[in-house]
Length: 213
Image (cartoon, rainbow, N blue to C red):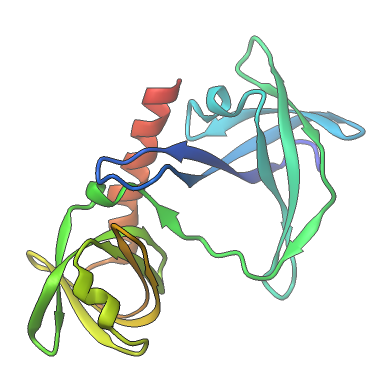
């Protein structure tokens, strides 16, 4: 750790959604500045987004210590042990650095948050789907329509919500009693994925922070 340097962290907050899914953990990305350090402890302040420091107090999170030359992330488990009067936190490193080769910035939110999309295969309507998480290259869809269980990996789908269009390729299908999960690769988007993430994920995180602080 380096004094006066900013670091990124990831905290996993358990949430319950209206669609009836079991509680799942949403990764909340945040950053902070190290203002003092001693051995395996340091003091952090100037948290972004504001309020995340209250949520992670006395809880564990993953600290992104550094990025390697080949693009992998070095993660280390940390514990926010105590808050101070100036909204800073005393943080202790409680794990050993671990290089993560398959860590993706996937932004997760409750499926109903981005609304309902219509799914088509070869112009034929299959049913409604919801987005549970999304990255710049991939997306995870869920649906309660049982016919989606019959799809095969490699199937091309068109996902539509008003003027927003996504063309995806199914790479994974996981069937559950109530919901079916489709892991897909994004091949085309008629809208900015970054703006979509900002609109839905960032606002969702703000709502979580408001409810939990």
